[in-house]
Amino acid sequence: MTLASSSERVHVRAPGKINVFLEVGDVQDDGYHDVATAYQAVSLYEDLWASDADEITAHVSGSVAIGDVPVDDRNLAVRAARLLAGAAGVDRGVHLEIRKSVPVAGGMGGGSADAAAALVACDALWGTGLSTAELARLAARLGADVPFALLGGTAIGTGRGDELSPALARGRFDWVLVVSDEGMSTPVVYGELDAHRARHLVDIGPAPRQPRVDPDVLHALRQGDAGMLAAALRNDLQAPALLLRPDLGAALETGEKAGALAGIVSGSGPTLAFLAADDASALDLQITLSAAGFSALHVHGPVSGARVV
Image 1: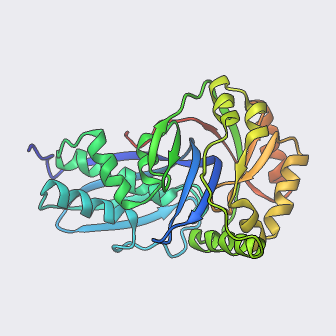
Image 2 (image 1 turned 180 degrees about the vertical axis):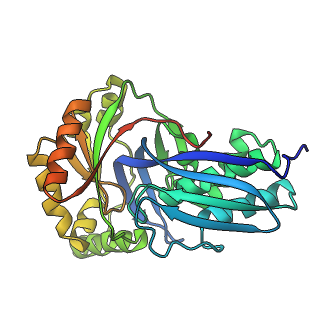
């Protein structure tokens, strides 16, 4: 194994994601849910720099509110570095400098992007030379969204979302994101979904759920047709997210009235993703939402996964 020199500093950039489709199955015995989702990586990035150190440490800053993002072993990037070191037999530390631009606890996989970036950066810094498949196997041990942050582009996720199949997506899709300073807990949103289903199925008993991605989503992606994709957007976590955060409903209505083809809660929320017809329409929508007092960002997808810059 050839290790990088101690003076080297590796910079990796990894994207956030939007779930353009998310169907959630029943809760399993292990507490997780089977899902079927269509991911799209978008041009809002986490940046991570890895440099040689005696121990594995991290520092977090950001252009978004970072709140109480941990820097110990609760941090996914730190866990990724430890996992890679153990798997590759590396007896070295690393300092991870993480600059966050993806909203924290915003339903866009920012922590997963950090973990994917750490895997790629430490692999390069330490010269471990793991294959993409080997990194993906490690990524799946860290969280359901981490393998996609490695892959990027557009993909279908099944199982917990970590069993990926790349999906063909032609052209470019323009999105306007409305972000919130107050994050949402993914387990809490899933718990609200389970409670909602239990309330409505109490008299008829639970029916088995076999989640799958709507073929109309795949067709729209292949055609590069934003209008067609807008008609097929779906997120089973949207209803429970709106129950927990009613203010998001007003923001969705504002965006759709302002010219979005459609709006959707991204993942478990609270970030909202509005699909626009094209670049110019997205810019107009961003200006309108910003003027209405929302924090709005224009991004596009699909983009590449975690890469050395």
